[in-house]
Image (cartoon, rainbow, N blue to C red; front, side):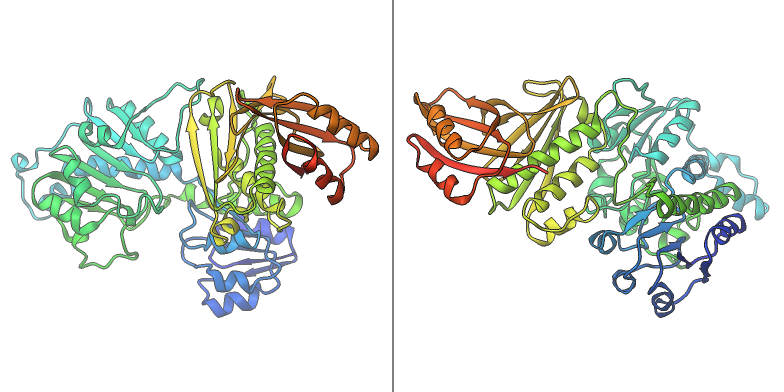
Length: 520
């Protein structure tokens, strides 16, 4: 196998690669053409923060199976282009979270206690303690934006120094067994209650430019802002305006709208903004850790397909009280069914209810997208399916609720014209329990006839006689009702029927329509 390393790794990590593989190409900050030349037959590419892996490089790397970034996030990798080609993108989100959280606290304390001004005064021979009155953090409230690995570590440290901790993250729900450090609240509540706000979230379409003039105006007067998440979450000119007006007391930034940041940039020159040059992970322990960790992950994937720390392929947490893998498979079967029933749909909706809503649903979403496309005889994987859906103009959305309508845990997949709900009986046995409000209990497997009929005597008998004449064995049959003049039936059969037989079924008295479905 050939591994291309585009940025310098720590010596221990480099040795591990060289001991494992015969072809390890070590480049240092190469240009795009050099990368393309070396990656044309590469199985893996490893980068840190400097090298950008764009669509052109990816499309010119036909053998590429995995991209690894020694660090947290993927801002220098085109994840969409990699995903569309089925390439796994790995990173190291845990290793540098402690060092980044510690830097956030350093910036917070520096801004609160005016350490920048105090240091400058001392260097200039000035001793004016009265001008350096700051904010005492103990007893105050801190609000954390983005409650992932870094956010949780920031919460633990701020809690330890006596602060009340709030957090805002629309994608996080506590497991019932957790002992929460932070109270999860709305964004408005966090802004109005917090003396300090610490940004720990990545840049996404929802967070880009999030901290603008309007949001700063909603923050508590005299409060602090710290950003260790992504520079483009904060609109720097609006931050300067909020500081100059006196609405904000101070700020600390380790990340910036443009990097590297120029010396003359307003936030760098502002006396009440504490700046560091994106050094959240810049400790000796973290630097060695991210390098060895990404090497271990790339080796694990190439050698045995083991995936850890993937950006574009969520890993299922098996240490939960819910059978997550079972629900992933069930959701995929529901998606396959609605795809076959509603071929012209332009939307795909996944609703997750109950304890499932407290788990990471990324793997569920990926499987729904994959099975939806596979049912249409299109090649797709858990990695690229959501991007392929988007290319076809089919939207996919996610909803969550703490409780199911009839069961403790439920998944529902809906399109323009169909809505299917399912659950795992005893957290083990997959069942379809509702179709367009018809209550039913059907097994999603093998070949199935799905038909609607008028609720009249003799319908099931007529179907049974016809299938018997065609030597088609019925393995299971379930009927569904919703209290009106119509009913549905889901019939598992041992062998598929041909098109002519399907037409004969449709022509039976009181049959409205009939579909033959295949579950893989």
